[in-house]
Image 1 (cartoon, helix red, strand yellow):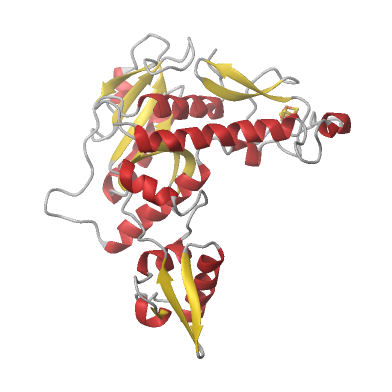
Image 2 (cartoon, protein in one colour; image 1 turned 135 degrees about the horizontal axis):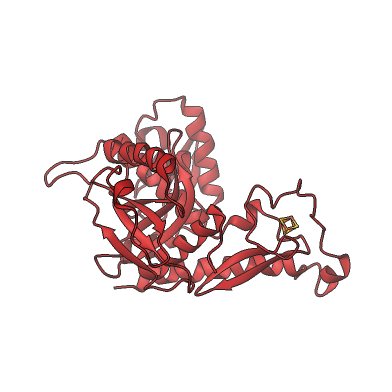
Length: 331
Ligand code: SF4
């Protein structure tokens, strides 16, 4: 079954990426996230290719995102005790915000802090590793028509010019037929085209490369500016903390109609009342058919275990964890 909703398609592309990244270059360790970006641009799917050893070192900092304020502190924390204003680069905003971030970072055990008179000193617990190898942006469009192609061409053009990502792709569904060549010609030549066929579910063979992407990373001997590097790291950190199965954060797994269905090697949300993959927008508190899971479901093991809704959340969290483990081991 191929879900009609773009949301459902997006989840299948994410799962495919998890199983088969990189589609033309062979297996690479990577983590996958969805709906992330900057003020100007939000990507459907983001694949963060990682250095396995450095990624293991990143995991030692915990499972949560290290946000931009914390990154400033964690990356700059010295090996020996020092006043935080001496140790960290000038933030370009008032130091009192940095002081707040120092307390937050110490509260999460990301760094150590101590008081020396009226000065706060910091020291790192471990060096923050350089774990992000490449960032790949994927736009998902199951039904590629003229207007979608125009819009996508603009978005992908933006990716190519900002070079925030190292590679940009369009994923589109073919169900066995070729993608319309006239529409593909509209796309920037630098963007890769992934022709998916999820009619028999998701597995590592469910997509073909219809067009190879260009490498958008800086040429040999050139570097991105520091601001772009930091922005890329912030995006990667959010991808690490969020993953792509966090749809339960915005949907209603606590609704009695909510469930997960297997689609090949993917698990996608399913609404029994509507008999379809619900979109994140319709599966919300304002859904007319929302019906809370009965209290007696929750008393099975409640309050420690929770009801089926909690079970869905735990299952998705376990999956995310397992994929992180994979990031360390794939050759
Ligand atoms: S009935 Fe509404 S809230 Fe419940 S699972 Fe379906 S879409 Fe989500």
